[in-house]
Amino acid sequence: EARTSKSYGGGQGKKTWWLFPFGFSSANPPEAVLQPPSAPGTCWAFQGSWGHMVIRLPEQIWPTAFTIWHISEAISPSGEVSSAPKEFAVS
Image (cartoon, rainbow, N blue to C red; front, side):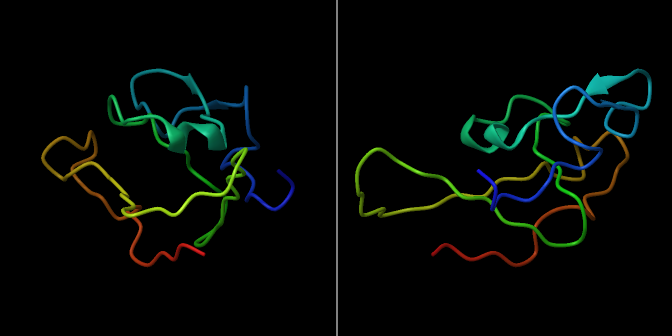
């Protein structure tokens, strides 16, 4: 989707070292937000301090809940969570 923000580091296949300080890993695509988190670094990082994602479904729905998740400081490899979303909107 063209209106979705670009991934941090250029998108799929780009090697990033900042997610894993002891090795390299491919940057996750935007679709990563649709999967349950499995470990630190399995998120979708986007360029800049704000971003957006468009999710198109095959038919209209009426959501009753929405969840945003980010790791805690306790399990963060760097011990910080400054990249956690602070403001978000669903429209």
